[in-house]
Image (cartoon, rainbow, N blue to C red):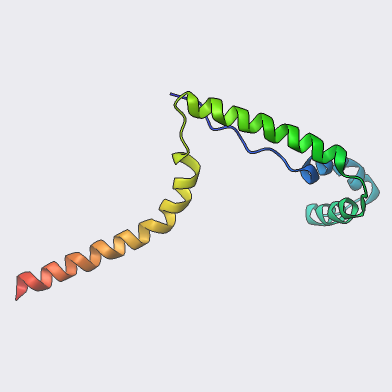
Length: 111
């Protein structure tokens, strides 16, 4: 059986933010995490040349795609993450349908 599915790569912004987060904290002491993220977003939007970070993100994405192909070639499937999200939403609907059909069956039997 294959191991866990490779994790998705970070975006250029997240790579940049991870490298600059401590600097932003020092410049804004006592700030909340949300305030630091907001300040980071403002700084990111102000950057004219983001090519360095976009190239790093592109390289990570290519490595991720290669790792996913290897994972799938070794028997890994996509059924894990995507199916969990869908099944939570689908379960109540299935229960409701079963309940409806069992109530109908009970009504038919009593008639």
